[in-house]
Amino acid sequence: MAGRPKSSFSDEQVQEMSEHALAGCQNNTISTLMDIPKSTLIRHFGKLLTKKRAERKSNLRCIQTLLAASNPAMAIFLGKNELEQVDKQEIRTEAVDSKPKSEQQLEAAKAGARAFNEAMSKTNIIPIKEAKNG
Image 1 (spheres, rainbow, N blue to C red):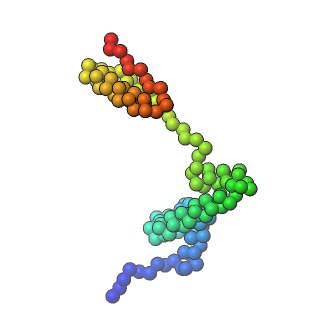
Image 2 (image 1 turned 180 degrees about the horizontal axis):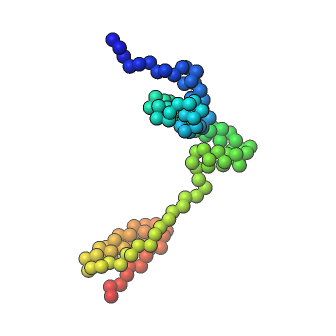
Image 3 (image 1 turned 45 degrees about the horizontal axis):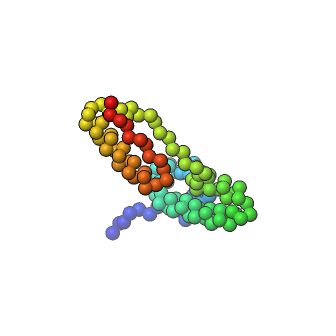
């Protein structure tokens, strides 16, 4: 019974791909270095490469923990550049025309403001004053 054809890649090639992924190389780089079409690389070795990159992140977290005491700058660098860690979150808001257009929308906006103020009264945040009709 004929099964699926055996991969034409040698164990050495698979090992080399694994090492590249563990070193942090992306698919484009690995496909260029190995002279393999990117689509073939992903189709045949996508799971393996993803696993090796996850292993790299795990290793980096361990290294980061060890370096934190003696070299905090290196720990910060690794965290930001390899582990997608950030110092602060940037939250952007855009102005929206929030004026109600009808009486029904005005009542809905007031109800929303009351609910918001009620929720905020349970925190240390000062609530927004409800707009007066007129």
